[in-house]
Figure (cartoon, helix red, strand yellow):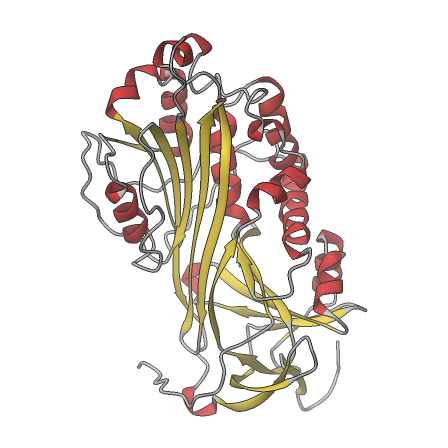
Length: 421
């Protein structure tokens, strides 16, 4: 009887601050924007919207702390994994993200890249149709190595996140077959920076009713920003620099943030934006927003995807990844049946007077079985002095790159902020 061998297929999704250059053991070294080229229908947009908000609500369950996820990165990773799946395994993924590839973002300020890491001894078994699809639909680079250590992958991760996520793996499985990676990088400045001299010590009431001293930034917008509200919440949309085509949306619920997010959906976001008041001649918006920076790990990512309907891919007997490797080649190479054995999502964000930096990494391991009319502008005040949620959105496509919560901002320890000229 043949000795059973555990085979690992690793799928990585990296969202970072900046795309840097790397040197890996490979004969391919293309450096191009990695977003899929696809046309998305209204039905597909609705599926993606549903995924975004269902994902948020699932992450929110039993989670009353700072968290941050990147729906767009997850969507790309799941799409690449989906292209290697077949039959019901593929159908379950399609049900949560749709059948199209993620909406293409043509934005030079959002650096996106994809890659496939292949262990030398297994490259002959990967289906050519699959690698051709990755090259065509995702402009993927292909990198080959013996993968005795995780250095190649960790160096790639560190490079793509501008050293914000320095290590993804402590070691590499001896039976590692391949890895899939998507990287998204943003490092953007506000259109109008918060002035450092206006950052002050201020009160913030946490979820337990405790008052803490935090670093509160302040700015008065006489143009470009927007105030939004519904019967359940109010908020503000703040632009980053025009050329970025990015915007920051902060939402302050009238009541409890946790309860609010449990029912948050596209309709609620539409209600907020339907009552938009744009700053300008008649309205100025006085915004007080706390500084925050934190890391987050979505340790129950597998459970979240299960709840959304993706179950078979995690079943060691039912998973069907035969579009990635044929059953015959699985048998020839000794892998038996491939299935997704691990899912991890980690993120980091730093929001300050200058702008915003964010990073995320998602890991999938796959193993074998075995309006007011007045002469003076109205001044609308909005102070985010209790738990709130936020999004970073690409304006042309309305793609949600990041969505998260702030239950605990940065504590006041004095500030060393200096605005750049």
